[in-house]
Length: 630
Image 1 (cartoon, rainbow, N blue to C red):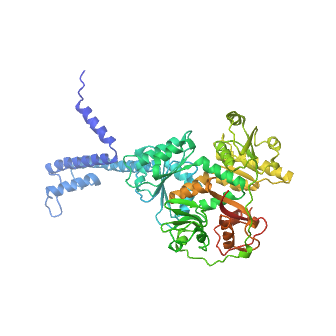
Image 2 (image 1 turned 90 degrees about the horizontal axis):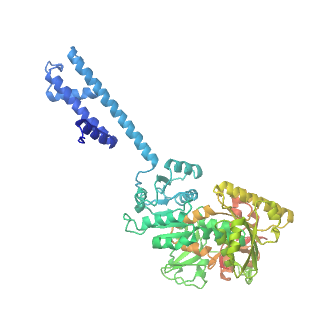
Image 3 (image 1 turned 45 degrees about the vertical axis):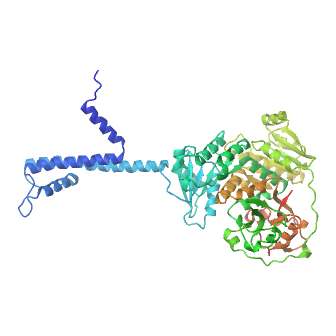
């Protein structure tokens, strides 16, 4: 059998290859056909002396004739002249011209449509510099983009680029629906896998100011996060300068590996432990969640660093009262962050004050305040030891064990915890037999949305209740709906018994926060929102990672909300409160007004970083917000 291709087959093969090369190759082919047609018709007309004479009676030159014939191929011009031979040639010429122009128009439309499809796929290179790059897609994207839009309000060319294994058009639509306007900040979405090094280059990571790696909703999301870290830090196309990466890890067991891969270039957030720590702190002191949110988001006052020559040679105690509109909370010395250090800690050259301020420009321009301390209002009350507590946890999810670990870290001997949840996980906990020296645990099998279960728990005898989000529902709205049912039952029980127990509830969607407040819950922890705030903050300032770790760690200084009567007696300025807290080894950063503790428009009474000269009425139920060791 003869395997040698025929001439027709070879021509067809070459034609197919040309067609496969896309629109540019096809336009080139049309150009060649146009030239060939012009040459052929020129030869016929010139050879047959068919071209009409010009107005002066002379025949045009050969070049002039070729030019006019080529024009007639494109324009369908017939150069009107009698004679059947001329008519036949120009008719064929017009048909060829019609074919060429129609094909050209079709190719241009096809090429335009192909380009639009390519753009909709989000596969084109991002020619941005100094952008914030988000790798991956989850519910955390929306609050992160919202926070970055606030943080970049004063920037004229801020850009956020999102690369995720999602359809670009759907990403754009979801962002428009859930985030809305981002002001001056531009958001660019691209489709691609962050763990694929070729796809990663689409988002131009080498030119990015910072990179945020999100945990996905897959069964083992940490593997993708670690792979993405590896692709960035060890990829062949990486830049020589260090990256500024912040990533979230779901399982603590993968934390060490992620930190090894990321090295000094990455700040890795333990997602479960961070949320669990905040829930535990909120269960111990009402209003803490709002205080943390005020520090973590870009909407109010944030944490900044400043080297202030005016404080060199002085102490941290001096810095506490130095600024009128900024609130010192710690020192960075030799690269080490110290939150609420002893008042006698010296401030040396090169040290930076860590402070809460409305804006970094305000801190940079801050001078010495003029508020004076009123000694007559300071109360010299000794700190009272924390008592044993009786806690109730309703529900079980992947964070529950970490929450129990954190509760045990804060608990004093004699404290108890009752955990209510589905049979399978509760049975596993009983069989595991994990015990703590400071915390005695009782496990109860039951459905937390059923009134009969709650009635049998004697809720009113507990010091605090934690409501965990159900783990078996992936839809955030349905999961939050179950939590709301439990909260409504708890509110009704409180109304019947006449005793209101502090309640902390976990929510998955921030839009359900207001609904939860209707149930008189003390604190709502929106897990996705709080992690998003932290990721956004660290992406803007890497040094904040150490600050947040210290604030949320039971071993260091964290936020406490304490009765105002422990610090002052009667109306005075906030500078006096700061001095009173300093004498107790604490740093006062704000207060909570009882009169506004149920008003969402007043941040539920929480005010962070008031002016030192601001008046504090010290009314019944008011609280002082301080940083202190437990």
